[in-house]
Length: 85
Image 1: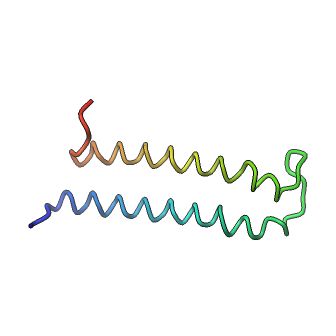
Image 2: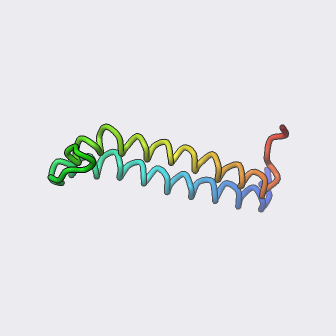
């Protein structure tokens, strides 16, 4: 089965954005969380390590989801695979 060049470009872009967003997720979840205890300063009245764990990571996760949905909707329209409303 031959896959069209248009669909190959679509999946290439899809995998690239997914990889980048997963890398951001990994850094926020494991790297920043691991080193947050060493960042001993106050951020909005709370220790930075607490803020990263309780608030900062959740904000980043919501932004990742929102950007992915926005990007994929644009990509679907660009490559003609968007769902009809």
